Length: 103
Image (cartoon, rainbow, N blue to C red; front, side, top):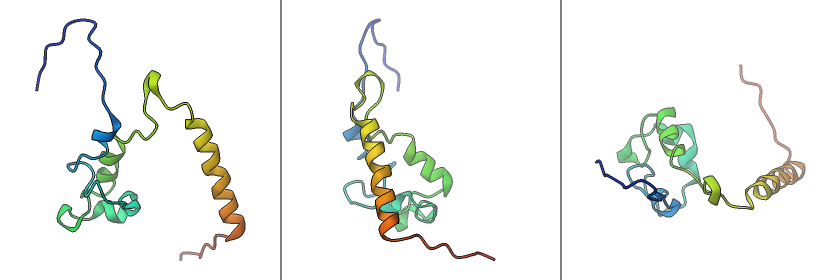
């Protein structure tokens, strides 16, 4: 598609629509955190995966902008990242991570 826009036209996008594009995110209205796992991304579209393994995960990551972008980015993005780190440390202190040796 091509559109002719006059100079100075403001163009923007909204995250809500981008994050609910079924062509990019299978079952966009469902809470599926496993969609970001490589094994899920490798699945076929018929099975609910995005197909393409890492390429499928990359395809989903490109339109993902949970905090917005540009001059309208969420002011709390840095605080959110710090809180995520603090929570991760707290969880790992409470429940130590056990890593098995893979041979």
